[in-house]
Amino acid sequence: MPLETPARIVRELARRGYNAEREAVTLLAGASNPAAALDAAVETAPDDALRLTAAHVRATFDAGTDAPAAATPADASTDDATTEDSPDATTQHPSVSTPATPTQPGTSDADVPVETKGSRTDENGESAPATTTPISDGDDPADADPPARDVSVAGDITGRSTGTGEYGDFVSVFRDRYETLSGKLRGRVNHRPASAVADMPGGSDAAMIGLVNDVRSSANGHWIVELEDTTGTFPCLITKDRDIAGLVDELLLDECIAVEGTLSDDAGIVFVDALHFPDVPRTYSPSTADRPVQAALVSDVHVGSQEFMADAWGRFADWLHTDEAAAVEYLLIAGDMVEGVGVYPNQDEELDIVDIYDQYDRFSEHLKEVPGDLKIVMIPGNHDAVRLAEPQPGFDEELREIMSAHDPRIVGNPSTVTIEGVSVLMYHGVSLDEVIAELPEEKASYDHPHRAMYQLLKKRHVAPKYGGHMRLAPEDRDYLVLDDVPDVFHTGHVHKLGYGKYHNVLAVNSGCWQAQTEFQKSVNIDPDAGFAPIVDLDTLDLTVRKFA
Image (tube, rainbow, N blue to C red):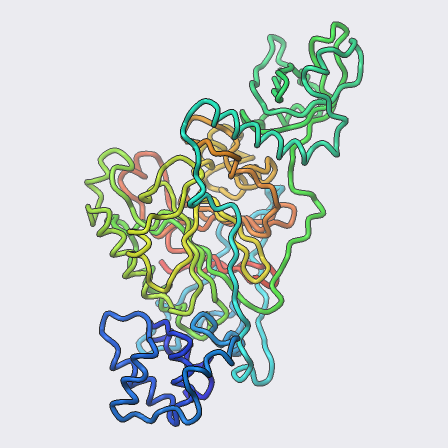
């Protein structure tokens, strides 16, 4: 392939597993024979190098390879749109909805990834087919300047943790939860604090916003929901014959809701007529990218487990190097890079690698298999070597150094990552266990994990219930609140594939890369392994590819 443009040089280096300094790319582009210069530079670079430097390129020129005809280190500043992070994103490629065609020697039909519907429903639980959009570009895209790519992050706790575990810290985090979420409900009800409601005369119209402090049934089958705000608590009665009675099944302790109704004659309880969640507005319109570009969403790699599916991961990495995957410029990994140590009973009997640092070393080797020009964003999960309490900070410096292949962006769990103007809420998903355990199966289940994600969007909080499996780290504010609505919600943890849209927000649980373990058999977990959901950032359509 001719290498007359810097963008093509970046793509060719990525195909060979290298990143490159901007100056190195500029020097190669200015050589009289860029292809020969690139070959020589790669030969000159040390075997363990992942990044081609200007020094490597100059060494090839000193050895006799043609030097740049009209390029000097100073020229690097004149090509701001071309960097080691900016491949030629405009190369024409086929639709991702077209069956893959082998593009490399030795690739058989059995190696070609296929598309699958997975578990996809809309917010009402109805089946809906996966959709894809053909990608087409201009007549001569190879010569176009590649767009600059930027990743911004919000809500990352890394380096900001201030909690000491004292009582006052817990008060602060729940007070912040109440203040933030009640602000989203105040425009919908004529809210009065609990203390003011208690002073109102019987028979008055009343409305209150509070955190759910208790839910219990009365002797005759009605429901009493006790709400708490910053001034106190007040009981609210939802009778079993009301249309809203079914919403009681969706309530979780510590979530924020609003109620409207009428005070009893003795002013001791509110008879509820309406119940409101913070929720995503039904009219929500997500942002989309202004060019055809895609992101791969994966999670739960679990390197170090005897059941880690290295072959499937290898097929996924190989596919990312093909022309069919040319539009995939981002890889978002939602936690559990490794299997970890001591996470569940007798885990040591199911480990292929027993040392946690060796597990991350091996994960890094597998990460090197993907194209070097991918923008990679990673958050930790409950199997990773970070604190279990959420929000979880990103990995420490030692682990970051181990996982430095392709210079990934490592952030905390949860974090909202904005790429190409599209906000992606990345959350590993431990709270999904609580939601699935507490809610009716038609509202949340392991077979349909995206429905549990819908509930978190409805409650505008990724982990509303404190206690049980959920460990909360008290901070100066509640980092788990969904203050802003994401365009895409990406989780993992439960090892099941599921996706759909809730009020126009794309929710994706991306499965895993670990076959069923003995422990999973004991708790009836049948994982969906070897899947890679691919989202079109310009349309928010989704294609799911299977590599196992």
